[in-house]
Amino acid sequence: MKGSMSTDLGIITIDPEVIAKYAGSVAVECFGIVGMAAVSMKDGLVKLLKKESLTKGIQVGISDENKITLNFHVVVAYGVSISAVTDNLISNVKYKVEEFTGMSVDKINIYIEGVRVID
Image (cartoon, rainbow, N blue to C red; front, top):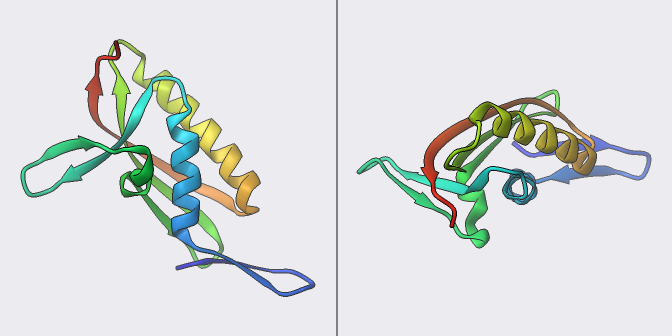
């Protein structure tokens, strides 16, 4: 479902793909996040995604009340506190996505799909 807002001049519609791309770019800037992960259900393999395909690691849901739910599949850096990284990710993404879209973020779910050592 697309997010829609009515204004005096007409209706603004935001595609979930746009929200996913923006949220992904915000997420990879956060400390401790190595990147987004695509999970192959067939073999259970986790693949680190390139910058061009960040949206494959994010699912966006928009409710009838225009509330956004985001599901992130991420790879974190080795040796960092997962709770600190996820708290930082949630606060940054929530603030920036709400500012970008004008819609409220209801829920952010984070799935840690792997750990990677950064050189």
